[in-house]
Structures are given as structure tokens and as C-alpha cells.
Image (cartoon, rainbow, N blue to C red):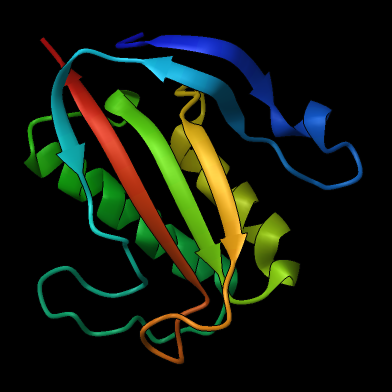
Length: 137
């Protein structure tokens, strides 16, 4: 593992009433080159066109694909991911968004904060995820 992950846990144990399965932790100790990503939304990175979907799962797949692509373009890997901040426009989307996000962070254990907001920059967006990664020295 690229960084030291403190107090690893899985959301299926922390939130048994929800159908979640995310590998997270309470803290990450990292040294190296930091990558700060702009909040990623369900849009194409090259054209800025929104994906044609109002489904939170499909939107989250695109968001996480963008995060992976940008980390790789910076010379990193998903295992270098240290922090996620998830913004949702509807708390009812939490379970499908986190389940989908979990597919991309299996075994990584980043720290994560989730917020419900009134709106995002475009009315069609249901989810935005801000990410930080650190490529080890």
C-alpha cells in the first residue's frame, strides 16, 4: 500500500442499516507529490458535456472514471488516493452513490467526507466528488 492508513474500516460495519461496502479509514499518513483534483462532475473531461443520465449510479461511474483518469494523467494510481469529499443534492442518493464509488476504492481506504447540498453548478448534476491523491516519494 502506498500510504499508511490509520483505523481502516468498511462502511458495511459502520452503517449496518445501509447497503454500503466502502473501504475507508480515519486518517492517511502520506509523503510525496500531492495531487489536488477539482470537484469532478458527471461530464466528459475533454468536452465538458454532461453525460446523458439523471441516474446517480451512472453519474457516479463517470465521476469516478474522471478521478481515475486525472490521477493517472498526473502519474499516479488509484492506490495513491488519500481523500474524497462527496457532494450530493439528495441524501436519498447516498447509498447508490457510495456503493458505486466503492467499486473504485476497493482496498484503497481513503478518508472520506459526505455532504448534502442544495445544488451543484449545473441543475442536472446529482453528485460531485473532490479528490486528493499523493504520489509517494
